[in-house]
Image: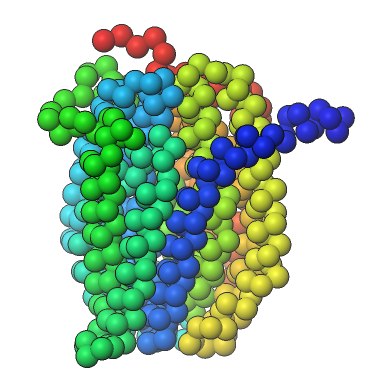
Length: 467
């Protein structure tokens, strides 16, 4: 029994060496990014609860854009990964071009929406039923922050297009390095511009936004320059801009597989924003506490989030090479590894996560509420890790319609109604509401288990193509 367990779920040194080689740069990159976001959050929090809440609301809206971009490039990324595993760099080039088109469309639509309806969207999260904060001020600071942050949308979309394609090849170091440089610059500029150091004016939330925009452009420029100077590692980039043509059959295949994924990411992200809006009806105090808790939770979530992303790379490459048995074996081992690592991180988060809210310059009631949110998130983390791994497993084989049902449809049909009803029509404390909403993931985990076990996702989607 033990021997069979080890054979099924425990890999050898070479397996973990490969996983770590791909995952570690991603984990380091995201750890630094989230840590700087944490410090940025603290700095904004030092100037007031309204400023912190306004920025948090805008970042929730921008999170929807970020995930839509991720979905837009990921649909083509499924093909790009399998093309790379097959050794078809021309096919990978076409997938890259598709990402450019997708990023341009999503960015244009987002800029139009936020430009016309930004104030109304921010106002959805502001409710005066709480005991702290001024929602008029929170709206003012949110609008200031959003106006400047709109300039960061273009470099973010372009950077994601390049970074997503680079990761298909397993080269994760340069995106990590670019991110480290960018977040370091962001942190320094935050300090100088928010508080007005070295003779610069104290710009508050506007300073935070300007720092982020500059850092986004820096990260994008580094990644683009390296990609175009490293033809040997990125053969798909040679001639990528000589034409913007994509063969019809490839474009149709990507649209067929990728559109459900893009819609899924858009609906999932907007669903997460809707859930946060449900919590926000309990007052600005909840908005501020949720902002603190989510910032800290993101620091601990990076391990399972990036290991999930590794599943799509490693398993996708096996599938593209036609190695179906190896793909399933790698997937079993990576799911177990992700959950095991997550259990350790959840334990650490439960033990020390409650210390972080004390750093924030806000009311003690907000700090205590944030601590309770953090404890709930720690308890739910292993379940979330499995759901995340199951999602990327299904996606690696191009089962985007299934992932659409598994992810966003589940969120809108079950999770959001639960959150809405509990927040609007019950007298339950907001922490209990948060707990019950978090643990709707258990049902999703059961569904994911049977989907992964079925093996229907084990598909080579780039075999037998005709020109």
